[in-house]
Length: 271
Image (cartoon, rainbow, N blue to C red; front, side, top):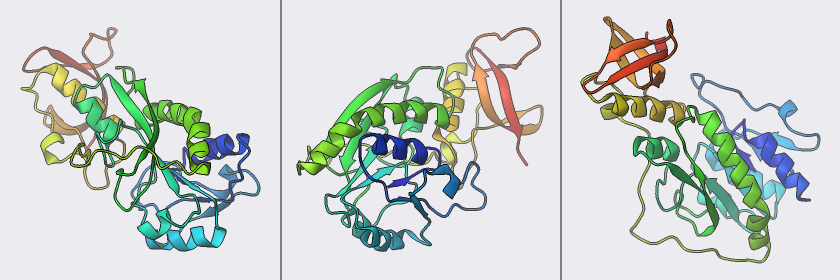
């Protein structure tokens, strides 16, 4: 299994509860400036190995050494090489938080928020040599309401939906079902946000800026860029939380925008 640190333990428990053996969890070498928890051997149940390959090219070797029947990927932040995807006897499956082929790529939920979506898809698909293009095994949709403000918060909802579909996914693997091919020449790409979305323009409508703040915070860590950055009283801040409704007296900083007011509830100084 290949997964993020915060998702590996519950996925291992879900697979074991279904009667499956999980011999190894494959993690990744995290750059020194990446925030958050690093998966350790004590995060996993006894008997489950933890492997951290030097490069993604080594994943295929690891899987061939363990010789699993199938591999499960969830939120792995590196593209798996073809040699890794094809190593397990029954194939490799991945969970992607979008209704594929929409929002392929590393930032699907961030783009869904940016585009004003009220729901997101959760799709289990077979993995192939490309990214998020394999045949779909099953999918569902979950709400994406205004209360979601962090990658962790949204991921907990996605993980719950994904875990509920695991029995169906694994049955299809065992029975050799190919899945539903994704339509060719369709879909959209959800890459990391660019410079065009990294700076707050206070002349924009308050609702637009509020969405911008949510989208950046839900998108999670960006390997090369911080956002959204706003200038307040001559100081640059990274906005963490905003509201369109006036908060209780003494909390928040009101900013007059191009249309309407926005209250800044949390921000970090930049530099």
